Every structure is written in C-alpha cells, then in structure tokens.
Length: 287
Ligand code: UTP
Image (cartoon, rainbow, N blue to C red; front, side):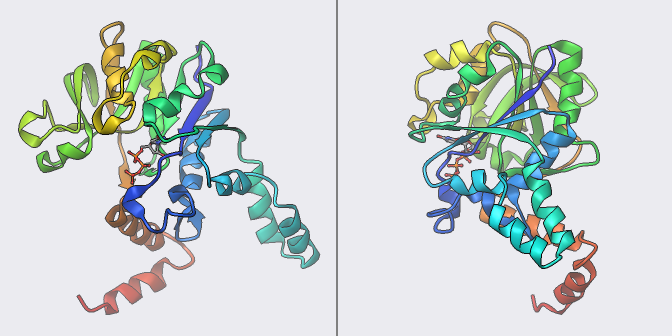
C-alpha cells in the first residue's frame, strides 16, 4: 500500500529553546526568512506525500494560520501590486492538504502519534519531526520510501553520531544488509556511551506500519515519564522486520540552540540574494 499520509507531531514544549518557545511553537522560528516547519513540509511535498496531519498543542495556532489563507495580507499585497510577495504568500496555503489534531497534554512522541490513529486507519504512514531539517539532493523521505517500497516494512532514518552523543538519541542494534541499509535487532533510548549498541542514531523521519497503533496503546510511559515511540518500535520489532536507512544528506537539529545557529548560517550562506554579502560580513567578525 502506498504511503499517502504524513504525521507532523509538533506538540512538544520545546524546553531546549526557552524562553523563545514560551509563547510560540519552536518550528515557527525562521531559518533566514522561512519558518523551520516550512522546510520540513517542502521535504514531504517533494517526497510525494499527499496529506499532512499536524499534532499540535495549546498555543500553536501560528502553524495552522501559516498554512492557511491570509485574507487581509493577500488583499493588501494585491492592492499594492506586490505580485511576487502575493505569489509567495498564497503559494504557502496551496502547498498541502492539512488537518490538525490536538494533543491535550505533552505526554510524549508516542502519545502524540496515538492521537491520529482514527485519521490514518490501516495504512502505512510517514512521520516527520519538525525540528530536524534535512539538506539533501534527494529528499530524505523519498530515499526512505524507496526502502519501504522494497520491503513493505517500517523504516527509520539513521545517522552516525559521536559515541559521546549517544545519550541524546535512540540508538539501534542492527546488521548492515546492503549499502546504507540496516535490519534492526533492537534499540535503546538515550543510552550512556558505554551501553550504546552502536553509533547509529534514529533521527526524525520514520515510515511506520499501522500495527504500531495497537502497540502504542499498550506502551507504558518510559524515559522521562513519556510514552516513547522508540519503545513501541522496539516492540514492533518482535512482530515484524524494521529497517534503518543511513540517509544521504545533512541533518540540522534546529530544536537545539547551537544546531539552530549552525543551520541559520548554512542556509543564509546558500542564499542567492544575501549569501555573498553574509559571507563577506562573516569574514569581518572577530573570533
Ligand atoms: P522532543 O524530544 O524534541 O521534545 O520531541 P520537545 O518538547 O519538542 O523539545 P525539547 O527537547 O523539550 O526542547 C520530539 C518531537 O516530538 C514532538 C515534538 O514536538 C518534537 O517534534 N512531541 C514531543 C509531541 O508532539 N508531543 C509530545 O508530547 C512530545
């Protein structure tokens, strides 16, 4: 069955980015002039996903408004003959079919995914974590969909991390079966370096089979008292194969202050309009 729907769980509280995230969603922070979430939606669209379900929390209406029509703004731009800006703004509301589900309490990523069961039904689906922005020639999700097409099993995106970083990620135990492709035997959520089964970390892209929902319903709160998606994928592994794909591209963790700053610099330097001026400016910065 084709993967048609994507879930964007964006209801986390963004504690690593306080106070900026006190009154706005972290995925609405801009990388240069475009909110982080827009880059991730672009990846979904470029990968051929048709419908996006956002799981939001309180105080996140800015996301909904961003992907909706902005009637007054469009009228204003039209009246001033600002056609480029008008095209840009109206293009965003035509980008995707979207719907919004509330997660009433931030009880974990696994809990957020459970909220969309009735909208997904019995289909495989993609999950995008909005703070992982991936710069790649072929969209990361498109690379993963090719693996799904081959095996019709769940697929998680993998990245090699420094051993010292394992305690920030879900780390997999896996056998390499093809170039960049791994069959998972298990996984550990945020292990200390000495307990990590590998240096392969799960990052924010998943394709999941619908069997995950029954498992999530029975998953007890794990690390941090939250219902962890990793725990559910670990249980899924006992029933069916799960693959990991070492995607080709560069991931920016924009939910982290340093990751956000690095992404801002990289994206600004790559821009046609301001890139070269920004490069010249950086050369003048005293380090
Ligand atoms: P994170 O672990 O990054 O948590 O969530 P967070 O709250 O967003 O950020 P920090 O760590 O406190 O700074 C991973 C993903 O799961 C979503 C988040 O929005 C993020 O995309 N999430 C997390 C939910 O949708 N609901 C939750 O209850 C928890």
